[in-house]
Image 1 (tube, one colour):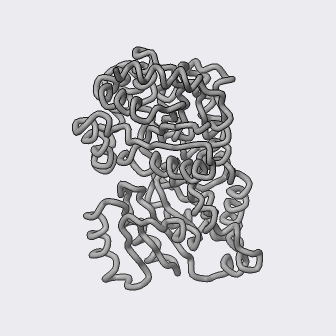
Image 2 (cartoon, one colour):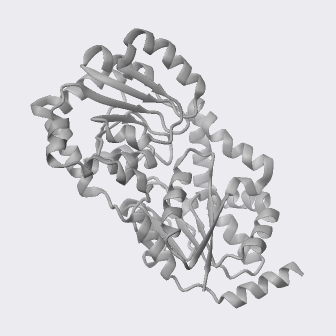
Length: 388
């Protein structure tokens, strides 16, 4: 019997939720007994909620203090967020349920977990909800709704936080953070030992500066320090921030020529990662895990208040990268990583290989596939009754 899975995701609040969804879709497509329907949860609220979703990039680029306030409110009063979202999405969500007739709903965005469970309960739908946490360690209580059938956690640390929020341990499954398969196919761990040694011995340091999907971070100063003080090439990915890309081109390319390349939002970031010796990035969970998969040592230059606060600690705990919040310390950080024939860089690459779970997306999909769902005939009957 075909299982219908409805995934509640997000297209505009960064690129992480969308990337995780794509990683799952790749594995769901290998299951002949599963059909998947994906919806942007913000689209269920019409133009007002879509506008809120799209404001994420503007706020995180220009007003971190406001973002911290939003995070604090949602953390202190998750029930209020659930109530507001429920009112906004009710009509379109219930119509979507009638259309898709899902056997299970998988939510990968915290803003919709409680609201969809409330709507299902109030309208007497017995459709199980599974949530997949898209953050590594500093998770919002919106992720931790005990009414969910299961909560899939990417890390032990996120699991422990869920338990603090009152989730029974037997409802939490630690399965890692799903990463799209193209990152595994391009990662440097696939190179032969001979090729890897040759690359590590290259005199020219290959640097990648990433801003995340929304284009944030002090990229210009980082690039200046690298290009002025080291024999290196620098690739910069400015994301969706077109103004940032233009400013970087004007200030860097004229001075440093072909030693620097500026990109906007790219679909081949995995290729840039796989050919880099070191990557500079904000502590975005998705960017961090993709960098680890590509086996490129990370230098974390900042973190958003709230959901990213614990990620630098996480990176250093597992030796996946190093932190350098003060731009003035970039020079010393690079020197430290390169000394003794790049001993620390090699160490980070070693522990990244040890840490990564290449089967995370497959494990999530297999877990969902094996769940015993509610009686499909009963669900369809209820849907028909609500349509009449």
